Length: 481
Ligand SMILES: Cc1cc2nc3c(=O)[nH]c(=O)nc-3n(C[C@H](O)[C@H](O)[C@H](O)COP(=O)(O)OP(=O)(O)OC[C@H]3O[C@@H](n4cnc5c(N)ncnc54)[C@H](O)[C@@H]3O)c2cc1C
Figure 1 (cartoon, rainbow, N blue to C red):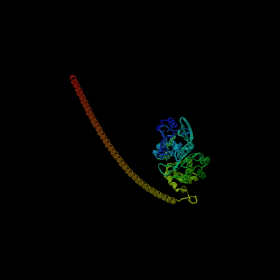
Figure 2 (figure 1 turned 90 degrees about the horizontal axis):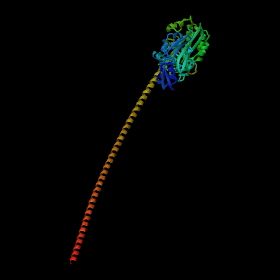
Figure 3 (figure 1 turned 45 degrees about the vertical axis):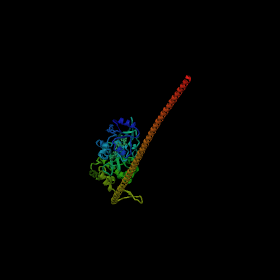
Figure 4 (figure 1 turned 60 degrees about the vertical axis):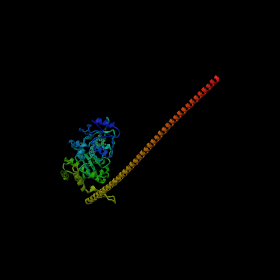
């Protein structure tokens, strides 16, 4: 991991990095992705300390550095008037520990359709500055994400900042989301709206929704329809119906498509009602739910037209629990389809409760069964392991025995060989001795023969001498005669 100390260094490190290297900002999405084997980066470039966490408000824009965290955004008070939707999204994103790490750039680059900070930025017409080395380009946030977890960014690109065009000073900015757990929520549906009104006539409007399609989606058809319209019951309901054209919610483990559409439509109706109240110079966001309810209950300042839409999601902004409670009293929100006809069917709350209880019981049963199966599997695995271990030990012992036997055999062989060698040596020695003896005998014999021959020769010489002496004596005798 390398740590960039400035924006330029970060941009160059990213541009010149090896393929498979990833940028890490807060790491809340990335580390989870690595743990879940969604990412396997070959290297990391840490940009948290690259000095990209400034928030600047100019005459015509709000410029936010990419590594600005949700906590930093929620603590930046001026944001409440110029981009209240983003402020709300940042302040309600997950839990404080996550907010302290989660950056706006990371939320955008991760391209989750449920990203909380994306809808308010998109509703305002936010633009992302992307840098590759020294080269900079601006991309509309709406066009950045190409699918869930996918963007048009390449491995060489770095998001350096996000620019929000400035709206009229009295524009209404709004964000609301629905999740089914108080902390660590992934929104089932979220809606952000920025609305500039001339009295009760819509002058300019931006609407973006999360978790209702493969990417955070802008409601262009609804926006076009609303511009120039005076808010009324009919306009509100038409806008809500038109929303079905802009979004394509899916059914997943968190919610059903029909429920998502209904929530999105109700959120839109609610947002339009709040925009109207805001245009009257009243606080449409409210501080406490009860106070907010009081404002909306009073028929005088609001068109009665939007009342029904609002009653479905009243109090949604500040209390997720309340949102759930209020939504659950709206039977419309639980439209399901008849198994036979495929027609939408309303479930009474009692049926819904019964169904939920049954579902819970089935879930519990399935869980129990799964646990049993797991235990059985575990026991079987343990048994097999034990057996295998036993087999292994037996095999080892047999191997040891065989090795011992082999060693013994080898030793015996060696001993025999040694014995045989000794015998051979002894035989050789004996043979040598015998040969020596024989040679000695031969020598003695030869000596004896030599001695005999010499003796015979001496005898013959003596005899010859004697004969010669006798002959000489005879000769002398004859001569004397
Ligand atoms: C427990 C938990 C709860 C959460 N709850 C919420 C929630 O309620 N709402 C919500 O919206 N999100 C939620 N998230 C998701 C996450 O916190 C946010 O998406 C966060 O904003 C991501 O920012 P980060 O700085 O942590 O991104 P990282 O994890 O650092 O990066 C995410 C991705 O973006 C890339 N990236 C980061 N910065 C840049 C950049 N400047 N340029 C180019 N690419 C970049 C990284 O390479 C990576 O692929 C939650 C996450 C966790 C773990």
